[in-house]
Length: 188
Image 1: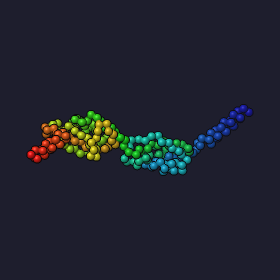
Image 2 (image 1 turned 90 degrees about the vertical axis):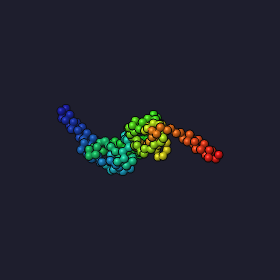
Image 3 (image 1 turned 90 degrees about the horizontal axis):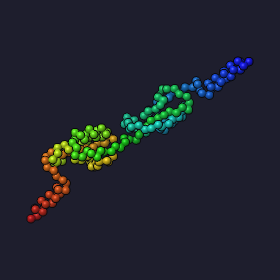
């Protein structure tokens, strides 16, 4: 009698486990890549799935802003209802990077690789009278001088103002003084 009760209880327990754990249920995970959160939410609600945002990755220009870059489980995998899909989103843009403070008076050959390794692009190269040839005198972004420690978006174009090696060094203040002296001489 005890053996029969044990067999019946085991059978009932197995049937209950199959029913409560949705053993036969399989929902295919959709591909959510490049979808924004509104579309993701609608799509997952249709399938009785939920989502959780893990993090945002480095900005990827191939994906729209605030869209899904990666998901776990991967598209095509099978899950049960109410399963969470973990998402990684594309941020709104590149992060800002600090311009190093030790680039002025370094050579172009030293500065260009440093800027490129930080994610900046080298823009226009211009020259000013200076004793040192190819020494960086200024960094510019969109026509404005970039100060050391200033933060710019990754992939920003930085223009370099270099010394021409002409052997003459002129300061802007000294040029104004020379111009004023020349005009005073012309008056006499």
